Image (tube, rainbow, N blue to C red; front, side, top):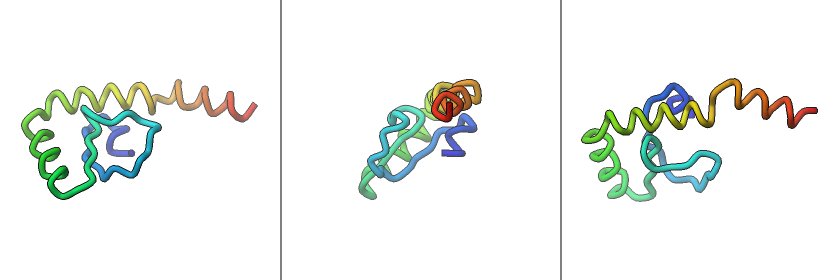
Length: 75
């Protein structure tokens, strides 16, 4: 997730996590064939995936959102 948090697209194995939406910017795969296809899509549409990754990073990893939720959970 650190790579994605930096605003760069990521291609990762599908582990069933649901805390961050997958798709543009965060591509997942379960089989070698899916990995190959997703990698091809990532290369062919890099600018769009990079923009989507940055949007995901802002939405899910920005300090103002993460820290405020953490403080709310602690208090």
